[in-house]
Image (cartoon, rainbow, N blue to C red; front, side):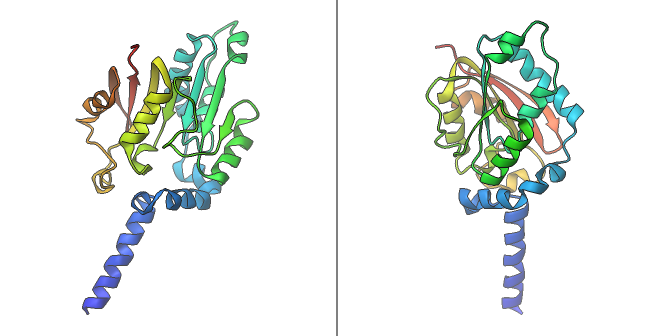
Length: 229
């Protein structure tokens, strides 16, 4: 009886780790393997709403980018080009063609299949780099905005990921980050922060300001700014 219970417990643990934690405790290559497997079904699983994405993701980002000359945005864990699609569908400032033409949008994605889908969906404008969040294959202080959505909890060391985001941001640059808050979050051991602590957590990592807002059922979202000096 005991061996049977042990086998059942191990199966349940494996299902939990692969389905809910998305392989987070099994190493980043397992995480990427799972995303490769799910790439063609990913948008359906997430049930993205284009209008919602434009309003709550594309418009706030557009507001920041439109105020920056030669704006540079990096999407970490860019997946199927969620951020780029939200931006492309959002409102643009009048007479801003030159500013739009001079923008640089770059997606970093470790999953080859996710990256290929992202390229097909987003079109030719965003540049893509296949690579990890730690270390980011990006030079120091080279981007104005960094986006990292539903990624932190699946990286081996979220603090190191945030450190890399700070490294690649220019002084005064903005980071848009999510924090997992659903009932599963505490069981993704060592990878999540309570929603009451997330603001202080970001400031402890080196951000000058951080504001956290409710975003989705399982996530809060934070705007955090790198110090000017």
